[in-house]
Length: 173
Image (cartoon, rainbow, N blue to C red; front, side, top):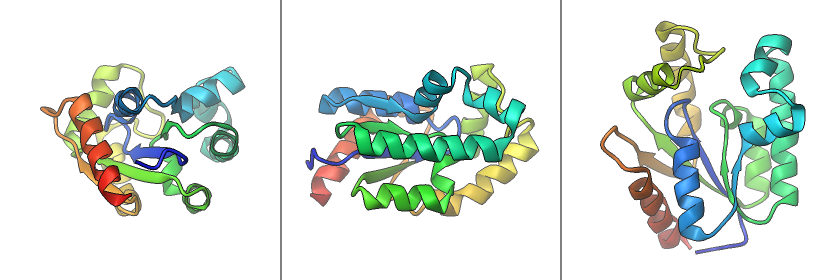
């Protein structure tokens, strides 16, 4: 497998991006970079707090700046994006410009919604099921632009998903 480029994990909120990215980083002995966590560390506030206090547009600017920094300054790692990062063309172009490999965790809406509810944190862009369902439908065609599509269901173990991504990327090299 190519070890000089980042591996980007994208998908809807609740699809398991951070958990799968952590498992993949362990398998590949690479650093895990959770974009929302990097933002929280740099800004002193969570993505949710920034969106609620300053709006989504302000958060997206921070997100793009942080993504650029992560891609330019970090060794090739496994990067878990926030659910909306991939939906912006400027971020997809930034990722493509680095030669990063991309994988979409395609989880069914009901599974994502169940995870959103059980996480207890609330999501400012998915305040209720109808809003989340609309957002999920809007984002699906954008997520489909990733190089890999990995189907996720409740019975799939994160380590198995990470192994599937690793195998698929190895076949592409």
